[in-house]
Length: 234
Image (cartoon, rainbow, N blue to C red; front, top):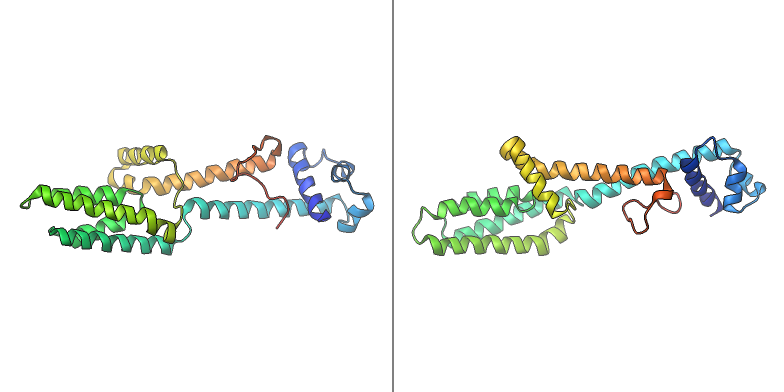
């Protein structure tokens, strides 16, 4: 639509050159329409500026919401369901192994699994410490490792894709660094909060970068899916 092209073109010119530096003639020439066509859609340049600001505000909100959905997880309810499913899987497996406190360990491991790999590592360590106090520790330890390996496989192949989606979208190196830094600074609670905090900072950084590219479209890189602006206003 011509109106959408006028708004999009004006938006790019305004944020590249400046609102006061761009004249109406430049916008009309860039779009390739006549002044009569322009005035069929807007009363004046001020009316166009108002629409551009409204469009930019909608873009802010839509982009931030999309990033939260993409990098913060699709559904809190799905995350809770996945946690309880893992608690059941771990508890059942450890019970079959014959481990003492199997249900308690399985439930705790499942509930802390909202942090990737924490439930897996925490559960194996806690169950392993319990195993060494029981008869036939090696056989039981193999059963413990098998239980958590199966749980991890089910989480990665079924629970996360079907119930949760891409929870945080952080690079593994960032995950390791965040957990290590959180543990060093704040102990056990730092480990629990490290990845949620890193995910929030990641979303904010991506949003700031996308907004910068929206204000400076000449720097936008092709193929940057998170930072591309839509071609027309919603």
